[in-house]
Length: 309
Image: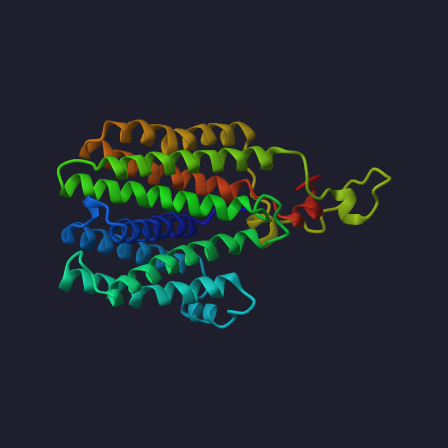
């Protein structure tokens, strides 16, 4: 698949924003000492909403007619994209009510505002899950149609959100809380394991072939004529290919930037290292998301010369 840069920005920034907000609310309501500071909570909430908004706005840039984006709300019963849009909009008022409660009551929230926080955290995770299911529900792309896709989206959203939250806490409170550092390290490890399992899984020889697609499983099948003499939308979007050695180098860079280096930096525990860990992780996740699209092989490629998807 041809990676659209606007979708890369959308999935990475909004995922980090939802992860940040969910972790912040849960840590505050659980009574974690570092998250009982109103300034930190309000700063984290504003940063999360800003990242989510930037992501959602960028998601409209790859549309042929962005003015028709409102139509994404119309198919809630059958479309994961529609569910994502609805839950993303519902998240805003509940999240703002929770932040308003922090503003007027501090960390000692009433039952109403605490409930808003819990609902907002749930909506954040549900929205992120819906985003992942837009891709995981596509049976025509084997690399996406797996439970590993939502696992990766959720784990990496929480991982990047944890690093953003740790950075804010380290900057505003002159030091990183051991609990937040441990949570960040654990989520980095979870994200790395989930991604490595995914890479192993998509590397296994499986999926449809030109033989199974045509039904001639007992004979040798090859394409004689592509049916067109120039590039088409299908060949440009679904026939996107990258050299194998380039993909391998990008995989190593992704693992280093998104997981290994942030893990080592977070071990240091001071503000500058934590900030650098968050920035490098976000850069690494942009590479990860580019690979997620570039390595996806639509079944339609079988009818344009590919032997296997």
